[in-house]
Image (tube, rainbow, N blue to C red; front, side, top):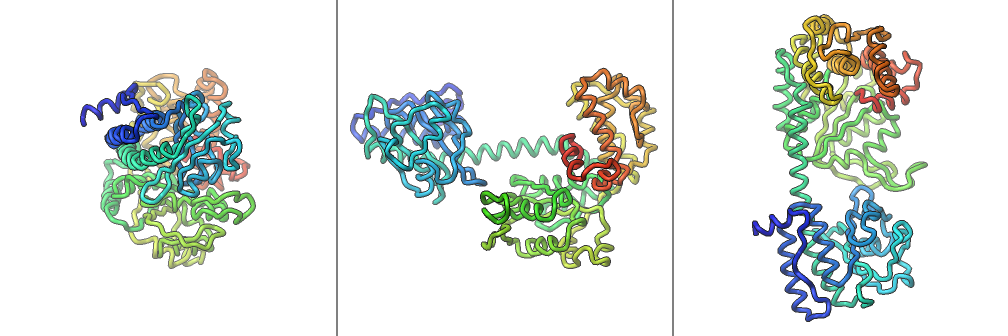
Length: 518
């Protein structure tokens, strides 16, 4: 078995069995059993899919075959892999739910044999028009896993002008029953590997920013690690830019839910109606523009964590709907009536004083109590200035590597300038300052003059540095500097920053996303 698994991982591996499409059924079934054994040994998903197509074609005597899988989010069928003359043109082509012969097979959960597609109303010529291929006959069988149709195997145009028969259909259907199990196993292995790589990189890179020498940050990190092991709802408090989302991601990564999705939602970046649609999803036709059913972010986060940033700025109507989800873990899509139950952990964050908001009547008391199960306060940077050297070194290493400027350091005078600053924008402001300095500094040693702290314009030396860059790069750098300054001046409030810059708030949010300003 180890030898077989090694062969399966070899890119040019081809199954050496040859299938006789005219021989006795027993011989074909014996071959099927053997190849099924190989399938269950495969753990590399891409190689497995290629093996499935090669085998499907050989079993029934064809050169062209396709594997389509159902997109769980849209229920569309996606051509994930194909074999034959137009395989490159097919990849990632999509069919609407129920569209074509493949869509019919998924909808009804039954195999289908059509030897003359031109006279079959279920056939769609869309794919042929896109690829230039001419389909004459189709043999399509569903892939079923635990009672759920996950995809379709299609084999097209038998060789030597033969026609597909019932035996071909039965044989391919028997093969498909093994395929679904093999795909599930390979997907599981792939998911575990990807999750491990992701978590390791995130912990090694991003979450190092949680590490500091100060007693205050170490206490907050200890609380985060402890609560991560529980399913408790967490409320993160702190000024804008202190790293509340970083804490939320860390709690997720340290929790038993780490292998499941982490979904972050900025509650003020969207209008109330759009926020509901994004979180809860919507049914087709529930409002203008709702052309199809859409799962919400809470539903997509099943088993994982939902992070609700800036929860203190939401409206009471939305707060009431959110309260129900927190209490019952049930909700309905916008325009829907069916209750959906989810298993997710909620982490909320705000820079507002929620107790004051409750007294003022702008924040629901019952929602506050529901969120305030475990509260972690993230301290501002001005209260833990001993962490500045470590944070600055981390950001310097990250951006110097990204911009291919290795061996950069910060001079003692420049570091003192960082230590003397009050940092109204906290860690986010520090990160932006370091990134800007990496872009603009003319030497590998960053001097005090390379840092712009609270300035409304760039110094002449940095203007000269900008002139050495391509125009679009310099414009982007200046845009980022201007936006960062405005956001810091507004104490992290992007709506106020937009007003300072005389911009629409929606446009500022879009610019921040484009420029990587969190």
